[in-house]
Image (cartoon, rainbow, N blue to C red; front, top):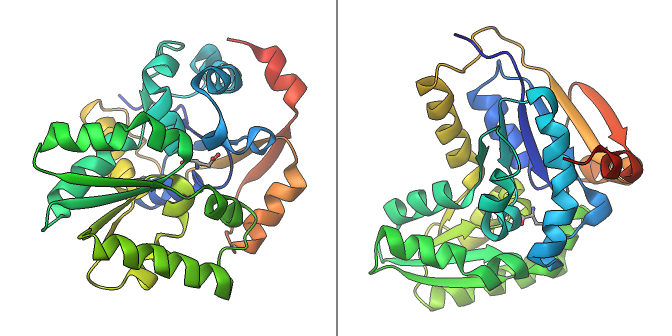
Length: 274
Ligand code: DGL
């Protein structure tokens, strides 16, 4: 049986496009609806209660008449703060990025010391730390929140000499504390994992949850016989908030998009409900 419905992928902004990239590479036949929510960016500065209120209408929208076959919270914050609660809101399966990233990092590390860069909300939950230690209790984990750099990425301003120096310093300090593996615990970082790998050097292994998550998704769809077998998956981008500034961020990142672009206003999404 082939399930023709698209995949729903959500994030506050451009970060989740890292997962879109990986899914399009590994599952090129799948149709994707990506919901970006710049109106409520940054998710990483919100409480769980606020996030639930903000994201509930998006889950409701994607779940209407089972519009999508699966939802990926392509956002470290949603995945660590409220994944089980979001999953309760819908009969569509919901998948996050934290577990796949932790599994990969636990396999990759040689010294058993893993760094996680994420939002403040993610670091507060300690989710990466907990899951990594569930996988292997001997693992040591250092979690750091870099909210200002997330903002710079969203604005497309991350590659300035000042930011390069600051990031290089931050990575050096992690390496000096013994970290040999670094999880991109926020998908904004995944989107530029090449930047971190370049500045971190060969003695720092960067783990990008986007690719691991897409691989897990492929296995899941395959085992559930839910994979599309035709080719040429379509891509739909729904922006909740200011479409033009979102498109500007994409241009700044040289992220090319094929497919239809729709903007939906905050009012519409609020009225959708669950
Ligand atoms: N992409 C989101 C994440 O992975 C973070 C950005 C935000 O704070 O909204 O956590």
